Image (cartoon, rainbow, N blue to C red; front, side, top):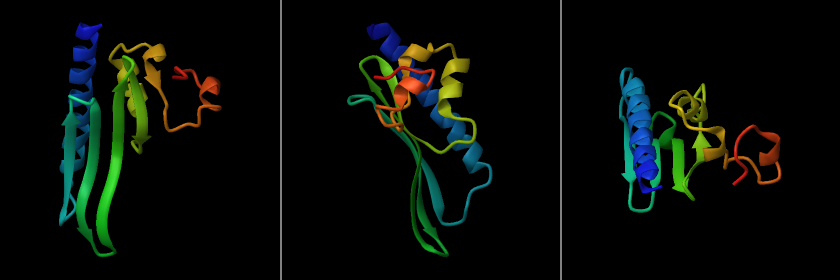
Length: 114
């Protein structure tokens, strides 16, 4: 499974960088989009930091953990959903957990429950 975990890490990094590139095409003044890869603990984050007219900006767009050889999607504010990007890349539904749903709701989705 170590080879698959390495592939999953690389896939996440590729997807998050693609989203960051899209956001950076039309950047907001005084805001930065950051991609964070913690491969030791398997946390992968896309967020924005900075300032707007309304005040401090610290928005997480995507947060995914690799846990028990599965993608645990903790936060996803993308339009189409990172789960769809993973499916398009060939990841089976059984390897994707919509962790932002309560555990009692997860069985109602087409994805893994844990």
